[in-house]
Image 1: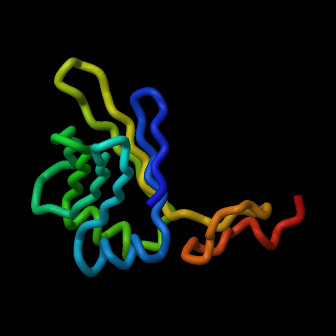
Image 2: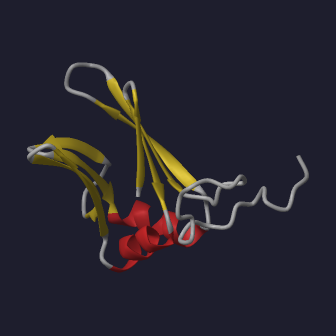
Length: 123
């Protein structure tokens, strides 16, 4: 799982392994070690009426209704966005999408990324 934070938004990019885990286990997580601590990001399917984002102890937990998650996984859609209200009146924008292979060579393992639909196009 790749994660980008920008202002009041979080973008999650999921590779094939992440998608398989979401479908079979209903949960994916990613950890980053910072000094003596660990920062966690979790996406989990849950039997709830609406998406919820929580900051808990050492990480961000995104809970998505199981039916919404299953619909996305089976649809073939690239991703979906959420607008979740915060208690202070602001909103958190979340984008969850499939991670596509880069069109240019980078020093990064793209082996589990999805084929990029733009790869066959001439730019």
